Length: 593
Image 1: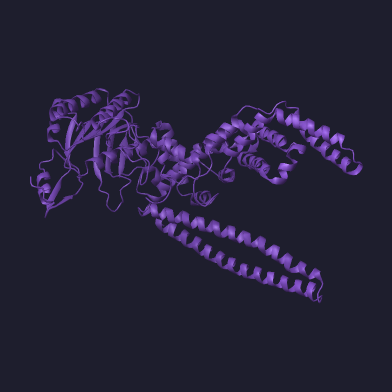
Image 2: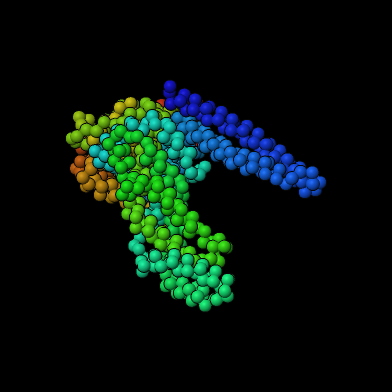
């Protein structure tokens, strides 16, 4: 079956399951109502008319409790089936290019000063992150974002290819993880949890660990003595001693317990994710290594987190009125604080490895979902040698498949090292630059690419495409552009070769300075071993290739003006664009030019 057929079949099965559980839910609701009415009738007959024994109430009460328990399991199963159905609906939306309104956009990762993130629409509504991410935890989101924001070594990329290839068809695993925890949203805050888990021990002296429960028991016994023999002195003395110890530990308790309340959220989700990953059988070396890291000594990470969840429940119970009353005499907060410290001593240093493993696996699962849903998108092939980008049928992954026009792009190797793309506005120049850049980012993250075939050497992207002036920063567009160009020059000195993407290069200055500046910038980047694309609608810039020893090749996009309407075919052609329809277009909308 195709991915869409597989999803449709599974969606139909999950929706049928939801309908089945809904019918059971309605029937059980009716049965519970009948039992309640029956109990009311028996009660009236027993207590009002004295015709039945009150013991007859045990039967409907027992049935009601049993059915209520079963009813709760039915509702839980219905909710899980509903979440599974939603999971497959989202998958179908991605396959059918209807995904821009679903999923996390990753806007918190967006950095307008990054050398390509904003230019390539990595984050935000309709961005690359939203297309890829299926993560349930912040660790998974952060790991995927980090892979998109920084190129990875080729060895790691190949390991990810193997892992993604294994996970691609693991629909049951992806579905199970999707239905865990809350209905929607992303849970677990790794920074706060990791900081709390690795913090130094504050609960001292340690002998209070054993003294506190002994004092609590002695206090209970002294209360019994007071009640039975009216001797209150031992109780007063013990409570005073407990108060002194609790006061001395107040700062440590504030850090351990109050800090835990903020750090330890969504632990049920984390424990469930860990348990599901621990139970799965993996075959690739990368996934097996990650699975082996989910241990703390001989204790499974899911069990350790579940025990931490118990500690958190005890911490939350301190806000209960009854617990507040018994807190001081039983040294409740002190004992809970020591329980939290015992957990940190046993498992705190392992927490970082667990969170890293969960993030890595979720990021790989996101790529696997994309690979499964887009089977025509292959993994890139990496080469050694001089910087090279060689693509056939290259498209932009954010453009719907039905409207995406693909082109061949060859840079480096036996080809020119720079493509100078000319053409009118809206003809496809910027989109072509973004298509190249986005696919390089995907390739260097370990993901499939939108191309029939892509061969490249390891590359770092530097882009100047979406550059604007800023009132807040007090900079013009030209100043913002040359500032970005300086950043691109800086990364061109790094060990990883650069592929630069410069849209409408230096359009904020006069034509003479633009021509001289553009040639100098391209020459400097070539001297640093870079390859790249430059777009322009200024035909004067198309001459710079003549002075650069054939390193620059002119290509163009064409447009047609028919009946006052501009049309484009978005096909990349050799040479310089030969016509301009700017004046005709202005006249067609009524401008007197």
